[in-house]
Length: 218
Image 1 (spheres, rainbow, N blue to C red):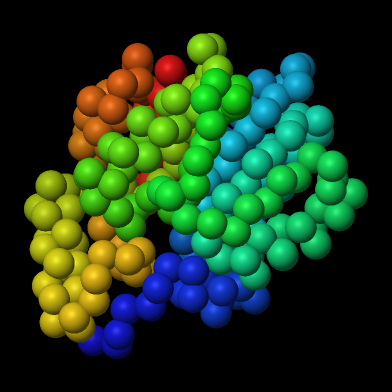
Image 2 (tube, rainbow, N blue to C red):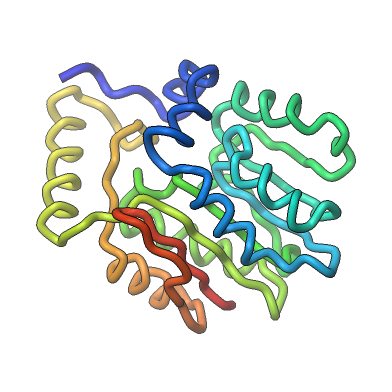
């Protein structure tokens, strides 16, 4: 097997082809449109976007709420630069941060909405749980979190992917620094992790094949 790539390096190397790949081969515009429908449209919204990449979801969100203020965090600086170039007219609405969102401070009761799209299917239960607690803390009392992501079709598939990643990391003598390898959870397990991390309620808002959108209320 080819050596696993560090997460930021993987996406920086594919910045030119990323959007076409996501829109045609993976997600499709419908997923981003459905996510945008969940964003309040008649009020000023402070949005935290984790793993925002080139901002495919933001392209649709700005259509729904042109005044939304976005803090976007991603490990791939080149992806963020492409996002910035697409929305030069929104410079005052975009705060883009090149960082590992697991390590970056998200603050307390700062955001109306937190969001992640096609980014958390690379991580363990423990890593997700720790991040979800940070996300929940960053939300205002009436805030909520949206997760749109690739989901495992069965428990057997999930177990296989996690076991394979563990095996590959050992074979390639790699540490636990984020490497690009898909380890999706089932929808049921994602809901369980969110609930156990303190979110009040979690609902499935949209499903298509092995993609689902979850909404978790603080």
